[in-house]
Image (cartoon, rainbow, N blue to C red; front, top):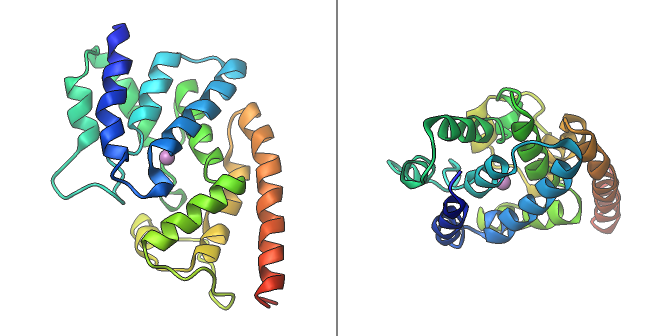
Length: 211
Ligand code: NI
């Protein structure tokens, strides 16, 4: 792969992420790269493909994409890549998103690394910060202890549900630990998961959310 390609991709995606709220901004991409680097040290994989997939993985997120636009496809077309590299990157990105648990399993080691790296950024202290940043951007309640978490849902139910941010922990964030597929991802998820549980316990105590 041409060494300019990654630098070129960075410039193109950065200006897009700068327009997103703090839950999916450029700092999210930097953290996912760091997680991916850590996992790849143990698991291997083609680093250039991993890096490009991380850089591009949220630019066409349905939560942010404007109708009729597809920055992921546009940027992939413009970058100097082979057709095989383009299709590898697309298939890595396709299996990253959670979508209520409805999408397929990653086929490649690169796909498994990118998905675990992204999911690690959704849990732990940073996961908590991001969840409330996103909920705030959407005008959601912080918590609603009477609300029932939906455990089975279609992609559109998952996207359109307007549940409180704390309910989102039960619908997604607390499920991610079990969905990690790499050994390093599983190890890193453990501490972050425990931290979320103690956060929720403390929050329940402070807000009298006895069940
Ligand atoms: Ni992401």
